[in-house]
Amino acid sequence: MGKINIGTFISAKRKEKGLTQEELASYLGVSKPAVSKWESGQSYPDILLLPVLASFFNTSVDELLGYEAQMTKADARRLYKRLSEAFAEGPFDEVYDECRAIIKKYRSCWHLLFNMAQLYVNHSMLAGSPEKMTAVLREASELLESVEKDSGDAKLAKNALSLRACCTLALGDPTATIDLLDADEQPMQTEPLLAKAYMLKGDKERAAGLLQRFIFHSIIGAFTAVPDLMSFYTDNPEKMENCLRLALETGAAVNLRRIQPHHYFSLYLTAALLFMSTDNPDRALDMLEAYADVVTDRTIYPLKLRGGDFFDRLEAFYDTQNLGTDTPRSEKLIIKDLKETVLNNPAFSPLHDNTRFRRLADRLEQLDA
View 1 (spheres, rainbow, N blue to C red):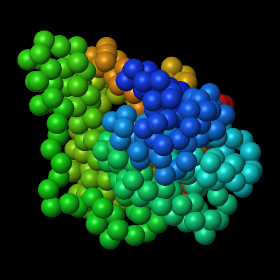
View 2 (cartoon, rainbow, N blue to C red):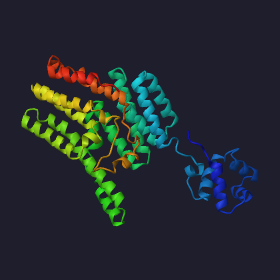
View 3 (cartoon, rainbow, N blue to C red):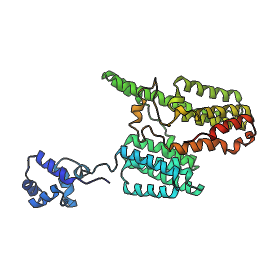
View 4 (cartoon, rainbow, N blue to C red):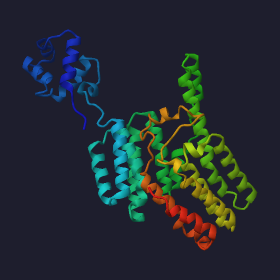
């Protein structure tokens, strides 16, 4: 929890103004011993004096109180990782109760609240029942709405809005998702303009970093949209294949499989499901074999966000984010899901006696965290 350091602040500001304790006491209408006790931390000023002190020192009441952030971003990141691993290994209810206690304790620590909401979203499927999963997602949505409206941090608020939209969609409320995201005017992409400004100032490194980030996010956005677009073309096999080829060629151009392999998990799995739905088991098996190739590739572990030969400034950007280069769920839980999403998926049950399927299934079974 943050610590109130008003005494230290008063002492420093008083000395900046060249005042004695007696002179400050006279201005405030209190005794010199009262000021002395404030500065030594033995007592605090009366609450009615706080605005007067803030005005006198030309500061805010918050700064006057010296109330520091309740948890640093680094500490919040470590906490997220610990709780993520706890969700993977322990009883859901115990970890969930701990999360709620932490949220109650640090209710005004906005980056922590965002992390906790993200933690809920990424582990809600472990809740044990559809009703409980819904309750967890609703709680996450409420936290995100609070961050969005009250944090005063524009970037964090934007991220909270996006994640809240994911919650409403998962809760089966597309209208709410549309209301959140379908604004009349979409925000302008500022990175290219900002990069030009840094170039004019001679800061080429900062400009290059911004442009790399912009290009990379644009590529990721296109890549992750392909599986959804493929689902619109189940009646047009040629367009489905063209979508798939577009994603694979784009990913290969930037070595995406090495940088962020998790995007391939979703691409190949979705493609396999779509090919099964269109009665094309051979292509579905092609996709599942490609999926197994990525999942069992030991060079991608430990799973984390990486840069690359071209995108050599991404890791510095990742370090500024709430979770850094860490994955949103523990690697143990991710690997468990990667196996079960194929081995226990009823959509693939018609393939269970197929030699190709049994071979790739054996490869997945042998994968351990």
